[in-house]
Amino acid sequence: MTPKKKPTQKEETLLGAFTTIEFGNSAINISLLILRIFIGGFMLKHGIQKWIHFDAIVDNFPNPVYLGSRFSLQTSICIEIVCSIFILLGLLTRLFIIPVILQMFVIICLVHLNELLSEGELSIFYFVGYLVLFFLGPGKLSIDATIQHRMGNDELAGNDDEM
Image (cartoon, rainbow, N blue to C red; front, side, top):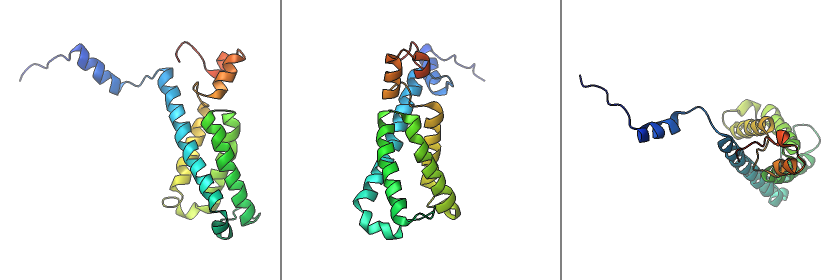
């Protein structure tokens, strides 16, 4: 049995980078930015596609709240385009996440309830992603944080020494 070799400083640093459970504020803020860009961007794409193909899909669009397929599609397009733009920018983020969370909840519970593991999967991913953003906020890499910083509310913006 050979004695165990002690890891070098470089090996410890490399290993520590992948095994640490502590993250700095920079990592959290970059992660929130990436999450905003991806879910906001993909949701914006869905809204634009619905808008472009409105006439082709309006008659078969789900009507989960019984206000008509046309109204449901118009509401969906409005939420997916307008809210996504605000979320992407990080402007009034929590306010504009609320309609999207409600829309995803309706889609999960009323449209895809019997097919959650097939057609409803994407709605669940969006729902969870938007919930994370709602609870954590947009992060410091957002217009919300810039406005709060300029107003002197650094605690609200989560601004401290790092990024």
